[in-house]
Length: 209
Image 1 (cartoon, rainbow, N blue to C red):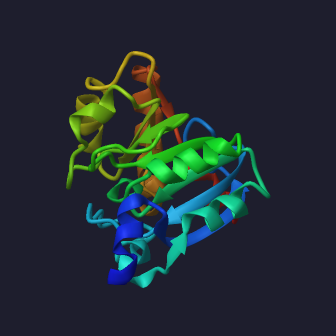
Image 2: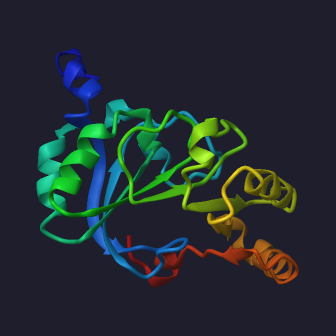
């Protein structure tokens, strides 16, 4: 990371931007909605099945003006999804302030493994065993999304569900490479435990970003 930009990075006025694009939300509660995605580089959670491992090293992604990212977003959509990587690695206060100034709704997809910053309209919490969420975010999460890679992950899902509020939407999502094996397992589980819903990576079926 450019040391000259370090103060701006700490203030959130620049961010290691991996990519930004306008698409259809593919997963979870807001599936099917148009949104502008901002993918920020940097993640040390280390999920072995992660499909964007190229996001892990922030030094591979240019430190980009947050104001420019906001200007790009407002041209396309009323909803912005901030994802990663792990976006809470960085200070999100300035980004969310500027997006709200443009009257945009702001969602975040996070593992919750860092202290929360920024003001969000929707928080999708997707905990990982490798680096568990900070305690505070459980009470703030609007959506809990657990990736199911093996049957044992259902136990982890229940452990995590006990920590969120009663109003939090609960989703089980098959890990993409195991989907044919895990979808029948998830269907059976949701039928027996209807507090849960099924999330699928519909953008991959539709062949869109």
